[in-house]
Length: 437
Length: 105
Ligand code: SF4
Ligand code: SF4
Picture 1 (tube, rainbow over the protein chains, first blue to last red):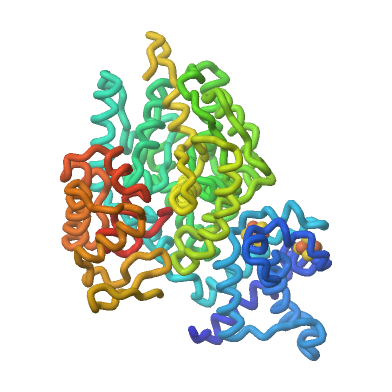
Picture 2: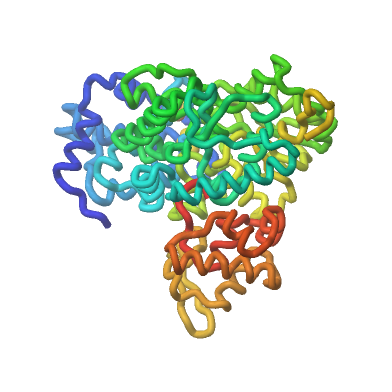
């Protein structure tokens, strides 16, 4: 068990003592233990153990609050269920708040009084980060982003070679040297971003988005240094690290003088940059920030690109990424784009704002330590998908894509997993020649 | 950390099933990992991918870009996804004995 440094422990407790964080104090202490949130959580549904009930995750943090910040907790801790922050307790917190919660926020929507459970969980994570107790694999992903500019530590040269390679193929396919993937170009309308797993291992989505941009005759660029849309600092809850990662991207948009920051298909990355970014940097962004799905939606509405649904004629379903839908407001926009691009969409049950997390959220996918629980809880999603009878699952998040790929294999689902850019690219009708590209 | 034994040698894997000591990797490990992923037999194409990954890891300390794998093996992207249904990271890199790459994989 890891020893806790006394000073670090005090700093962690200061997060609870901070009276200005009224949201935390309210939400942490408001729970009335009605238990209604239990069945909303895939961890409780899968393992049926009381410790996985969302309210118990809140209690893991509020017990410390009572012990260190209330009179009763200081004098008679056992009477008010106040807990000592020691090595053992902190280790349990790690397993609970990092290892058994994807911060999906589904419980928040089901709580009888609206406790923001996910917010409290993230505060607990922040306490653990302060004590240097983030699971090693999650921390490695954050460190890679801080040290190299992207969470997979891809060197600039290898990134550039990959993009050039994709560009060559695109030019061949489009039979037009204008079908480019611009790098480090200044004053472009759109500064596009990627999940590093795209250039590293799954580049079809980059080519797909490049086709969409080509069809839309967009003015766009990628940066070769800071193109990473993810921010795992949002999940390890180390605010200084999250701020650094958000700032790197913000500064790069400025450096290349991009007009709009376009967030590639990534749930948490969209949330971390769009909603949390200004909080991290303590200033509002002076450029527009849009998700790829909104940009594509806009192209469709304006007729900038024309889609032929009959080109996507299998049965499709949508997996709603928690951070884009329940926590990001993209429910309708995703439906609009998908319904413009495919003929036959069958929804999961439940779907939209009530959808279950894929199981890989909250940094879970990066944490090998909790692989087993991730695949077990993911069975809920696998069953949901199978019940739709769909052959293709569309999801606008590369993190979800990876978890779904693994579920597909584990539960022998026999489906295909694609991003929105991929189905849109497949449905594009070339504007002038009415020829599909 | 779980352990398993193969030909009298004990290997350790992380929670995702990746070797924690990549230098202990051998062809038997590759065959055994592949089997657990549903690949009954490693074809020449599988081995070609594995060798490129191994070489990159030994020379540069990390997994190669998918571009490098494609260009050095002459295989098309889609073929690689078909060869390793779990993809280049959880599939091919694991079979090649690499530690799990960071990030959303
Ligand atoms: S945020 Fe999601 S995973 Fe975490 S406790 Fe709530 S329902 Fe469970
Ligand atoms: S539903 Fe809300 S109030 Fe009820 S136990 Fe859960 S967190 Fe507490």
